[in-house]
Length: 239
Image 1 (cartoon, rainbow, N blue to C red):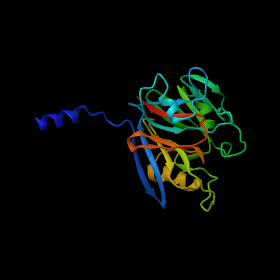
Image 2: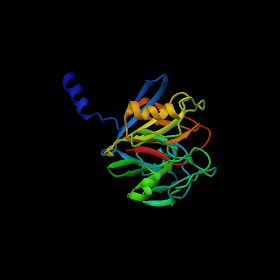
Image 3: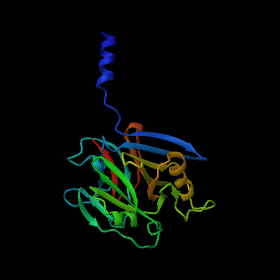
Image 4: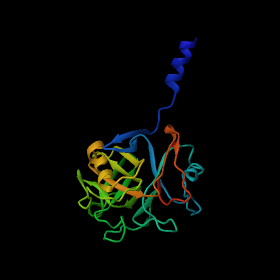
């Protein structure tokens, strides 16, 4: 009877929606969360049905349409009022246009890019390529700079940079079936962060989300990063 009960538990236990692992690479620590976009419900979140900024991972879980939260991460730069700095689409509705030109800060360190999500795919596009291709995206968020562009690091990343922050971003497989979300667990340079995506994860394209405010929620790891500031756009896997 005990053997039968154990087998029953094995077959009925739900699989983890997201696989997260801590990785030591080139002297730095990262947490990488891999999402099978073809089978998981990956979406962007910014405001609730009343137009109020959600602002936190707990706020996503409190939404009436969300049963449970498996994974979440901040997903793009935002202004003081938490509105997206760049292009933003959620559930087919565009609330911010594409910003193709250079500007101040990391966002304007061209080339930057767009993370585009559909029901069974997710791809990172360099912004001008995104404009030229005009792909249909159910959800999209623009951020910058690009970390990896067609297998190459952003041309302005410096090996000897001294600028170190906790940073987060996303890379996608060439077929768009897999998205890998990464946050550094200690301060890293852009060159180190981009190299992790290019050389360890070996993704063809990757996009920087942010630094300093970077946060991760990973239920399977028991991790929920806390911050006093509310967030702007967020990406999440919900069930």
